Image (cartoon, rainbow, N blue to C red; front, side, top):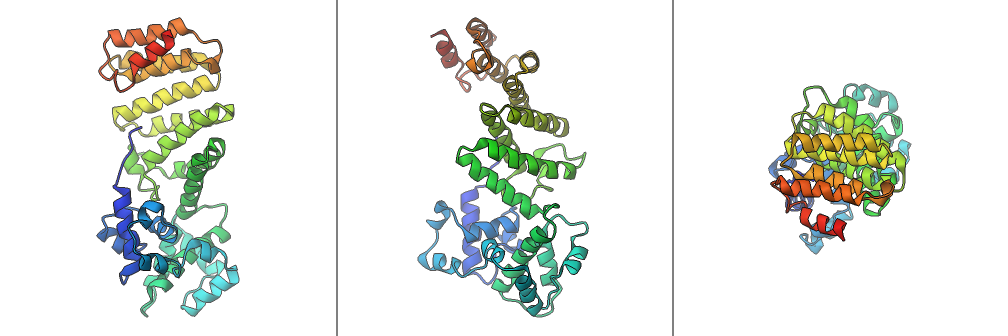
Amino acid sequence: KYKKCCSEADTTATATKAAIVTPGNAAHPAINERAGLSVHPYSIAKIVANPPPNILAKLSKRDIAALKDKWSSAKVALLETDEIVSRLKKLGIDGSHASFANLTSGRSSAWSIGNTWIDGRSAQLGVDEEDFICLSACELWKRYYPGRPSMEMLDDWVTEGYGLSESRKEVEAVEIWLRVWEYVRPRIEPHMTTFAAADAVFHISQFFGNWIQDFTTDARNAAIRESKCAEMGIQVIHEVLAQFVDEDLDTILYFRCELGALLFHAGRFKEGEAILQSVISEYPDRSRGYAELARAMGCPTHGTPDFPRAISILEQALAYPVVDATDYDLKFRLDTLRD
């Protein structure tokens, strides 16, 4: 995979500490900018509420103790709707369903509604009050419009999917991520032909390109147990390849080969072989197509393995020769097949 990195540990730790020890909150755009972040403020708020071990290691005991007193989405979720609305009213904010409905028009982020409420006040608010306002907007959107997910709800689903994936529950991860994709896909405009462009409508705790690769990887792993996951992955990859035509070659080859592999998992062997043969034909100096086709041919999951054919494919790659044989361990793959 070709993942985009933003030095996550360092920048998130900076923002987490800023949320605790400065007269402001890292979950606000201004601090995001100062910390050099492009992360959605809701994502930072979730990390502040539950810092991972690598971030906790960078915080002092005083900082960690301060976290316990901060508002979090989990704390707000424990409140009844009437109590949330009542607390907002005391801050001069109308959180009723009717008033909230007017603010959702043309928006995809509930956090932005919280910022609108804050900006509309003349009196200065404390940090904790601002946290509560924005987190309440996110929670009220969940309750008022469960069938129309906000960006923050999508972020929660993405996070939930990663938790399932880490627990080796790839089938469940793929199912919830397909739901995310079905809501995100209509928001991606025709001119957004790279993953970076799609980040504008998928502004959450993960880069779009990283997540969509993880999605298809999990679909492939899940397809070993559930063939329906292969079909889910095939659908998504077809849409990805049709939309993101200006992605770099390595990424395009990754998705084309994943498509071929998923077609094999779906029992559509001729289609899968055709896809992988086309990759080999168009890019004979690259290993990925050869490696993927040889793996499929030598895999007992797809019926009786055709070891001579698989060996021939790898010998063809090494004889060409491909430029990245070492990266794909072609010699090791070939020796294993021969054994």
